[in-house]
Length: 315
Image 1 (cartoon, rainbow, N blue to C red):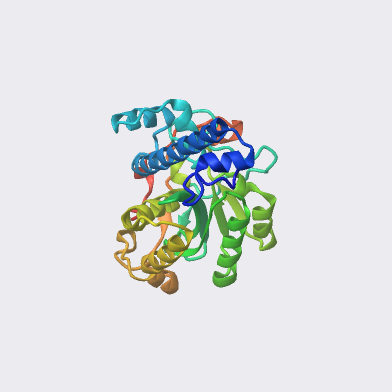
Image 2 (cartoon, rainbow, N blue to C red):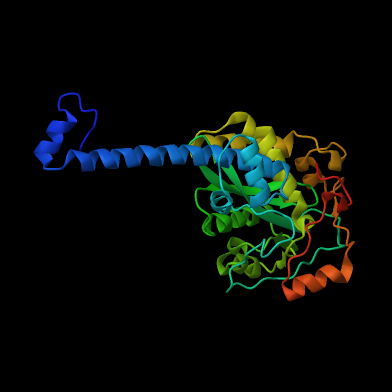
């Protein structure tokens, strides 16, 4: 039935059905189902856009608050639908709750090594994360690797799926062009706990650090990068497809590294600070001590902490 064309200029649908020996009612039902599916897909894309923007502003919103927000914007949605969309976008509220970060059950999770550690030089600490990028037709995932000292974006990749391969490719690119860090930090996502990803770090002799569950500060520099990317580029330009996104992000990250002054760097650029080895730095203050360490050890979910705990401005 896929070859029946409802708007065929020379052959009416009725005649096509007669020639194919297919009941018209069956064709009409399938056409109606296709139209409904297209409408649902359009509605889902509109909801994803709103969820993405609100989550970027308020990352502590879970599915319940997001339902309230969407209803306030005139959308009739239930929590189940919002949960599905947030799951597809790899978003989870930063409030206390069960398993906000879900590593693969068979992957090793490494301890967090950077609490209270002063970052005093380039390539001392790199970190990575994934984020959802909306497109006019569909969506993509962006992974980036950033140097903590200089805030420089060392490598990035986009993909339309969340498999580990494009994350590994991004890591290999950063190592190939920038040497290697002493410590590499990530969250506990399955892409970063996979043997393919951690195997590259072990091969290079890099110490592996992973965020404590429920601690937003542990990877705050990449989180701030995502906000900048979205508000300074993605939301303004509204990319239609992967090709446009690739070109646009290449231009933005070139600007971000070489031209955009950062308050935390005394208004120097990441490129300048990375090359000079002066003017950068960071420190994640250990305000919570043994309580959080116990939470990480027993696997319980701790409270996400406010960004005010970072010693230096991350802008």
